[in-house]
Length: 348
Image (tube, rainbow, N blue to C red; front, side, top):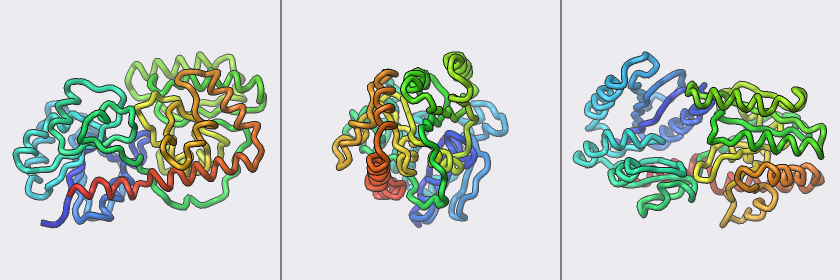
């Protein structure tokens, strides 16, 4: 049998602002293995090689949850002779549904789960998996012996073009949700304006359709109402393949998510030369550990964030450029998509 893999993920849609990145992951897998079968909850627009077959559980058609489950079992049974390895991305539910079946039929189960919290169901999904992956040492799944810390998976390519980097421009980009602590960024920005009155903040992203996220988006707009519209702008999210120019046009990027979730945007920004201010020490144990002195701020501490950003904005061009270069090299050396795919495929 030719080498093949079954990948199970939430969504295959290159235009999705949050999950569209996985489209490129599938392409990278297809370059290194003969057959790639993908089961997703929902599919949208995609452009994948001929050796990739995508099967949807039907969310885009509005089918019931019972139909999702029936379709899932139909596909894993229909394909059972075509794959020996299953890679479940992000959703432990699929391991809970299919894990016993896969283990009985001698399939190797690889689960990717990167989140600071977990439950009994998470422990069961780990038990049913042969291997577990996460990117953060603070992830719930990192406590298990079968877990491996992975690169985040950034596509290393020349994005080309010269984009004017706007001085003192600050970016927040990603899903609008309470777990992102965007209110900390806005509060910190209010303090930054006291020192750098010409600073600008762009909040790029959309809330999900969940009521809690939509309510949070309205709260953020209320929180920012005291800041001049010339200084802060809320901008709708864009497809991942369109974000490069946004990152490159800003002076710095801020991500205030709790440790345990390692958002890809943190590293995408750094790869494009835009330093990422984060509340987790992602450089620890690497040759770039000094970057934490400039870019790490205390969790949910708006004043500490403002202090670090103000210091960075006051640096000379030479000092800023060294930090930009080292951010780029940190991603290149430790978090490439190619090395991520190689680590998964070594299990086949």
